[in-house]
Image (cartoon, rainbow, N blue to C red; front, top):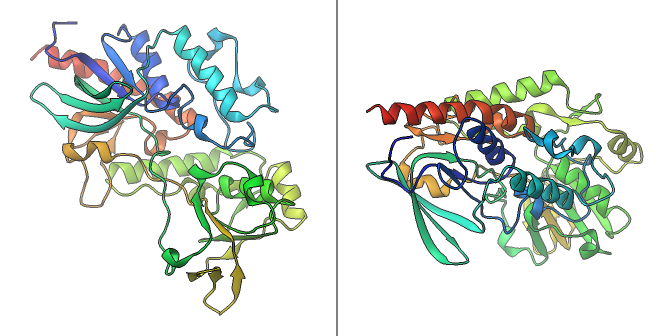
Amino acid sequence: MTERTTDTAVLVVGAGQAGLSVAYYLRRLGLEPGNDFVMLDRGPGAGGAWQFRWEALRLGYAHRVNDLPGMEELGVSFDTADRAAPAKNVVADFYTRYEEHYGLQVVRPANVTKVEPTLDGFRVRFSGDHGERAVSTRVLVNATGTWGSPFVPWYPGMNDFGGRQLHTTEYGSAVDFAGQDVVVVGGGTSAIGFLMELENVAGSLTWVARRPIEFLEDQELNIESGVSAVALQDAAAREGRALPSIVSTTGVPRSRRIQAAIDRGLLTAQPMFASIEADGVRWPDGRFQHADAIIWATGFRPELRHLAPLKLREKAGGIGVGGGAAWRNARVFFAGYGPTASTIGANRAGRTIARQVVATLSSLDQR
């Protein structure tokens, strides 16, 4: 590579599944970790968002976790991983070994707070153990995912509720709700997981969802549903619209564990309540359910606040992305965004994005 005027040629923000996949292919294409490309990650350790998930979650309870590219060199696979251990620990262990094996030199904790445009590329500001710092780069790969941007819909009376309200990101253990009346809001695998963990622990459970739950006949997400979901995500990203919910376009696989919960009457969702009161929730027809706690398993939005200075948003409310690159700035790439949010999608996109990044650098060198 030619002599550069920035600290690094490529900066990857985020070291979850998407960021690690891009890093693997950048390395294969000849870029040196820690020099030609640098990785910043907000988490205290390896594992991406998985390191923050609740203790009781096991591999196989949520959507499948696919192996990272090149993971076979380590002699490990999520397909044969320990199903009895907490998923957060298994993923953290595998990702730690992956980073060390490929010498990725991830800088953490590094919480990126702002990305500013410069004549040569970008200045990325971040905070960590050593205070506020900044690094300059020619090309940016944003792989921040969604965990840092939880979504909770507003309902009348939310501020008047006297019990506990928490999002998926704050859920720790079922024992925290022992004997309590709990309302779980959401139609995805997290809401279902909470219900199954809280069964026989909470005093009562009420499940509500904003749309009817579609339980698929297949035990795993089928290819047809997956392709449809990816297509919808890709269309929204290309048009700069807000990304649709994955579960709203795929449904919930009917695993044996979920089918057993359906059969015993646990997984029967009620329509959404209309308002929240000091001690419970009320439906439009006047029905009332006492609640000590409301768990909002209502998903996430892409974590993009740090990119605001780049003015990438479209009038439709989202960021226009095609082929992994932002429409409004061809030096900004998105990994794990829209159609590449799943582990298998992130792995496939990692190769494509890495190639585009190298091509962009070559183009810049020829100017």
